Amino acid sequence: KTTTCHMVKSVLDASGEKTGLIGTIHNIVGDEERPVSRTTPESTDLHALMDEMARLGSTAVTMEVSSHALVLGRVDDIRFKAAALTNIGRDHLDFHGTVQNYAAAKRRLFETLSGDAVAVMNQDEPFYGFFKETLRAPLMTYGLSATAAVSAEDIRMDGNGSSFTLRLGGKREKVSLRLPGSFNVYNALAAAGVAYGLGKDIAQIASGLS
Image (spheres, rainbow, N blue to C red):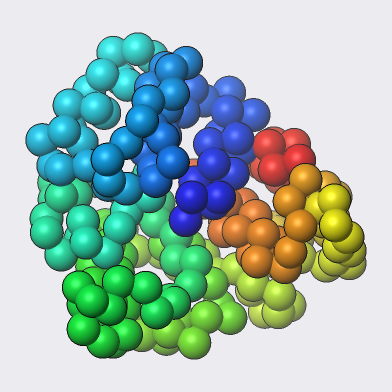
């Protein structure tokens, strides 16, 4: 989630937005990086943080939403314009008990999306069908299959990074990432899906990812 959020910020900034960030490593408020105590702040802190971002001129915010935050109500009353599913691991089972409970907690984010938002989902994730079944918002899929709305072709990787051809909306654009590993190709596709769902064009997306 951390990498994908930073990629979304980079893409939105490349398209002309001024984007705040809330996440595990730090928060970015205006031009300032701030330390954090938890991935998703408590609800009152979160609303205050977004208010400050808005007053400093931010036009968008990208945020990591933890499964704990969803269960504990920290993001209640926030209207998301886009939400992305990367994958379901085996994290935080001390809190959730089972993987199924963990997935159900994460699904809450997508169940809150209204019809004018977009749900961006990894089509190659085994829990994809579970997330899709209660969805009301328009769906944007990504993955390495040609059936995904956002996909990567001609993937090349080495120790310094990766490159691929981004395919979305019937168009193609070359992307060079300074991040190695196939998982970062997936992260980039998730970020591309979010940005495309928010109306950004493929040239802005490719530039921001690179």
